[in-house]
Every structure is written in C-alpha cells, then in structure tokens.
Length: 479
View 1 (cartoon, rainbow, N blue to C red):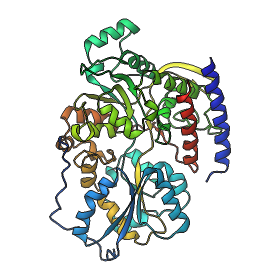
View 2 (cartoon, helix red, strand yellow):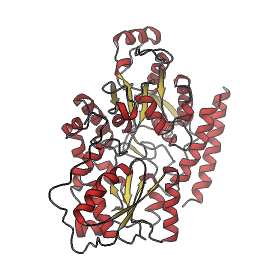
View 3 (cartoon, rainbow, N blue to C red):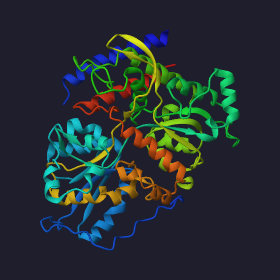
View 4 (tube, rainbow, N blue to C red):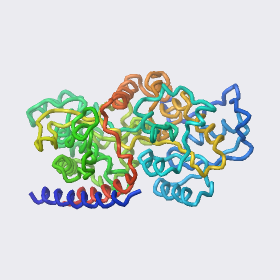
C-alpha cells in the first residue's frame, strides 16, 4: 500500500512538473574487416566543391561508421573530413552551442531523432529537399515507412535516415526453451508461458523462476531479467516499454489509441493515469529478479552483462543482437542461444474513455527513441559536400554493411527494406542463418506496424525525458 501511494504521489508531482515545463519549453569472428575501396570512383557533380574540408560531429559508437567510410570517400573524391568525437553526455550541449553561435563548427552531425522537435522545429537545420531535387537520393522507397516518417518535419525531409530503433525482447533459448524447466514452471505457476513472453505478467513470473540459480550449468548463478535502469543512460525507455502496454491499445493514432504521453484534447500529461501507476509498479517488481547492481546498468552495461550470460530475459534495441556475435570483443557467451520478439503486451489496459480497466490480452509496439539521424546545420559552411558524404554513408550498399555486423558494432540498426531481405550478408557478418532470420523478423514486424506508438518528438521532449528519468530513478531505488 505504501508503495502504491508513493507511486501515485510521484506521478502527480511529475505530471504537474511536465505541465509547467512544456508551457515554457521550446564475418562471425571478432575480427572487423575493413571494406575494400570500390573499383569505380564516386562521381561528384562539378558544382560540389570538395576542396575545403567538411567537419563531422559524432559520438560513440557511430564513430565506427565514419571511420569506416571516411578514408574510402576521401580516396575516391579527393575530399577531406575532419571529425569531432564527443561523448553522448555532451553531444546535446555541443550541438546547441553551434545553433546559438552559428560559427559553422561542423557541417554534419549524428543526433537522436527525439531531439527533432527542438532541432527541426526550431529551424536550426537545412531541409534536405533541395539537395534531393538537385543531387538525388538513392532508393528512398527502400526506406521503411516508420523511418521515412521520423526524418520529416512539417512534411519535409530534414535529416538522413540512418538507424531503425525500437526496443525488443531477447530471451535465452537454453533457459526458456528447455522442456524440463517449462514443466517445473507450470507446476509452480499453473500455466505454460509463451515464447517470446506474451505479456509483462509472464515476464514477471519467468523472471522469478529463473532468478538466483545456475540454469545453464556453467557453474555461475544467473538471474531472471535485465534492463537499462541507470539514471542519465536512457532508462526512461525501459519504463515506457511497460507504460505503452498498460496505458493504451493499438489502433489508428488518436486520443485513446496508440497514445501514451498526453491527453490530445487538453494536453494534460498522462503520467498520473492508472496505466502509468500499474507500469511503474510492474517495473519496480521486476527489480527483485534482476542481477545485483541493476541500477548501474546503462545501455553499455546491460549489453555487456546480458551477452556475458547473466540473465534469462533482456529488453534493448537491436544492439544486443550484434554484440551477441562477438565472443572475444564483448565476451559473448550467448551466440546462437538467443530468441527474439516484440515487447511483451499486457493482460489489461486502462481505457481513459470509459475510465475503466479492460481485461484483454494485447500488445502495443513502441518505436523507442526512433533512431539516430544525420543533420546539416543551417550554419554549416560546406552543405553540398556534407550532403554528398551523408548520401555515401546511408546508401543501400554501405548502410547494409554497417547494420549487419560486417563492420562490427556500429550502433546503427536495420532501417531499409533490403536490410531485412539480404540474410546472406548477415551470415557473412557472423550470424547463424536462423538467428539472423529471427532477429530481422522481430524488428521488421515492429517497424511495419502502422499502429506502433511513436516516441515523443515535440519541442521540449528532452526536458520531458530528463524529468521522467530523474523520477524513475527514485522509484527504482526506493525500497
């Protein structure tokens, strides 16, 4: 009872804070082969001047993509690229300094698309439409519809598509798929779980069952579930995974369907609604069956821990699947031992229209984070050359190598239709064929869902998430 009161109080305070903030807001081995330079040089239109270097702003791990293509592009074009590498924690500050000072300190930048409300809506970046009209863009129809949508603002393409991001379920097939364990689970809980788990109630029970014993017989204790929980490392998307299931139901986006953030009529935050309370209660419950030190799990720590074999279930973007393939570099002990699926649904959701709980198994896909994109600032000095390099990195051939594991771990996940149909390239990147097919199907199904909840991309979204992250940490750390 005390925890429920605490959660409700927290959500009411959080909702009030949000209201005020928005009112004022504005190959299978670990060796990573270097691609060979293409035989034919890239033809650069004469009007694109490459005599002056362009500067690229990027953070880790996306520097891997730049480092891969930079020397080849320079050799083929005679151009020159300078790189500014900054940590994720300072990327936003670096970007805004440029937007305010307009000194032309960089010509191309890789940023989270969740910032687009302020970045694109604030008129800080170039529309790519004129460049597309003049120079073209390769196979736009090959870009998945969900990804086409996120790079637009006001109907115009304002950024290069580069990454298809959504959370998904990873589970150990050598745990959840073992008939003996399935029988023991049924004896304890009275039902058979699904693969992947169908809802968060199943996840909770599975996590309890597999928590605290050596179910893979490696001589070490394993745990039930792991997720991103550390403050300032994108933990807010962990709770939104759960909120999406208890707060709405899939359907044509409206006030009452595929909507988890605001009442569309009043713009009141939904953070104090019963669905949010239920979701926070569930995530707090899952911490009981997680590895020690869960609150120190940022995205890097989660991936490292899970591929090292310490948990039965995890929730993350597509990055775990890539790191799974590299036993030496990432200490992966789970290569070929993972199953993949959409996020768990829920056995009920709160219908705000009737103000009642609806007991109904359902699943809502959620495009967490949305992905990384490349933008050209209005203050950029070499815009045409920056556009040229942006196209070079994101064309179908090069982007496939970046997302498939051919270049190791790049932080970019599949986003073109052809990324999902060229399984043989993923096998070259070190994947088993069945693993590649399962992984790609899970992501493709989510990206093709017309009712998937899109992430918050309005002006002020960054403030919203910072506040949610801060208060979530209080919930997860409260005993």
